[in-house]
Image (cartoon, rainbow, N blue to C red; front, side, top):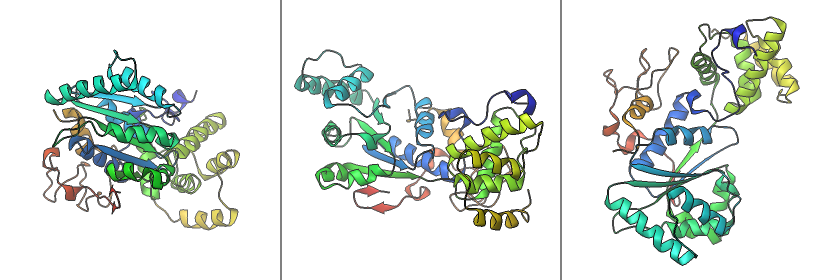
Length: 351
């Protein structure tokens, strides 16, 4: 509706998890790097958690679209399944057909996974919204981890969900599953105004904008306050703000429009806090797992706006947007070491 008015080729702020609009902010890049590390090194069971709207499903779909052809991935997005429904769904996705009962199913699946592993092929089961899984299905997932040889897992499983998933895994009856978790990643909301500004600007550029600075610094500051840095909330605010600006014939979106939209969406913070931050904002100036091209996109991605400060590895970020090792040369993906990924270490694996 407002695409022509703002000179866009696509809608930049939708609520769907479209991996085309992924923005490689430092915090999000760290999550993708951790997921890649776990899959590439066959860590077995990986858990990804994050608050509602932080981009978990987008990250999964980005990974799925860039998996090498040697990887067979089954993606389960509806977790409200009984044990029988779960196995029926998984076997369909993995191409396991001829079975009549659970014992026969496990035998056939074991042979399929062993043969794929013998041929150097990977098999990955990805379950979204895993915090909704029943304890019984989670126990079956633990048993699926028994498909292994002396030195390798034949099936890799990625569980992703809201923070409640971590609470569920801490239940005493699921302690055996918790001990199987080899890697845990946590996706955070955007931490500051700078990352929110980069997020907004890059999505506008991806959508075809030639003038992406349509949001004033004061507007971006208020978007950060109202959204708490959650991408889905940012998208909702920006989409409604652009529609409001279009209706008013305004091509520059200021703080007043954001305040009006946030009020309609019940996202406006406390009035006292809002006034205090407004004063501040006025002072602000403006055969691997993945395909080869995915390696380059993840590790050598070129920010569409000039980055500032330092990247997630603590090294300087150059104007061309590449992560470097201090001499201006990007670190190749194949030379990734454990120290290059920031993970919290806790009980049962990496956090």
